[in-house]
Length: 460
Image 1 (cartoon, helix red, strand yellow):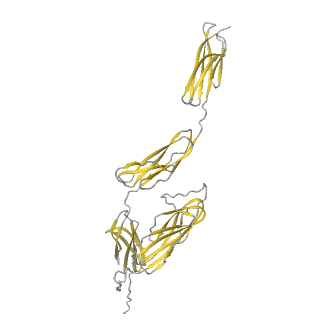
Image 2: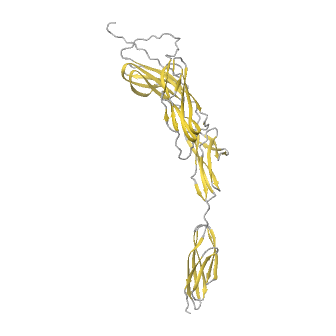
Image 3: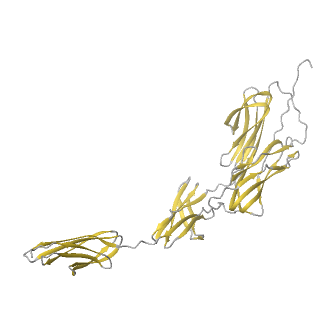
């Protein structure tokens, strides 16, 4: 050579990865898995939260040069429970930025419990070093250390094993490589940008001819970038990674996203009335809400009353888009107790259970008493005169009252009063008299009495 150093650059091997994620779940003998879509943890009032720790996942195999290969990740969650039921919720975090769905298991009793968790991925080929970790969401949020794995299979063998001729590159060059991982109604496009030296590289992602993301990264020989295509519906086409500017290059890969569940989502919830203390019988009403993500037509549901399923009922939805309907169920309580209600959707989920408490109290005794009495004598043609009296009777509630007026021990009037509610009524009398001084008395039969003295109206 004449002093010119010639550099050969070899394209880094792209990774053709199709990950089919599966999850396995095992529990210690003391653990009981909950089949309900709404797992609940109950503990005594004031009990501390369970202590949680989780080990770094182990990959088996942790390194493979044979493809396709199935890599299984396993870890253990340690829970120190304080009694009752303890719900453990967790998910897997992956090196490509994706997450698994949330999984739950219910543990019974107290003491140290272990939950063994697993997840598997299948790799068809390529070169990849990545990681998985476990994130516990309940009863405490804890994330494990990362468990790393390596797949080093080189390029997919689709050329019959022919030797690849690598041509020398210009002094300044940039190379790109793209592969796609399709799962969970999305596609994760992973690209590798390789350069002949250290420098900033501007790049863009293009999906079906449209630029969907732009960014720049500092590359020292090689750098991996990602873009997640998550349309929420079936989609197919091509995704390309393009380097913009000097030494520009591009590479693309075809993808196909398939979203399995297209059916409208239906859910229900129940709200309970406030707890009640007072006289009985009393009627209390539960309110339920039925929601649909997108539907036009009837939805069948039924109330679950204290664990007993009622008759099927129907509520209708019209048009498209998210909608909700309100339904109700009443409970007439004649004695103290607690009522529980839930709503079951036909062919769908069952809501959480709402509870309402009624405490029946004995009604206080209704009483009537006299609040005032007055009497006055008016002279006529002496010794004749006229005597009149007025009294007020108050009742604490609905009651019938019988009263009697007497003058100097002789009855001059009696009657009945009908109180429909708490309040006061006035009673009076008027009668002829002898003009002399005396006493007028108002009495409640079976109750008290009150008197008023009156002066003489005629001189002796």
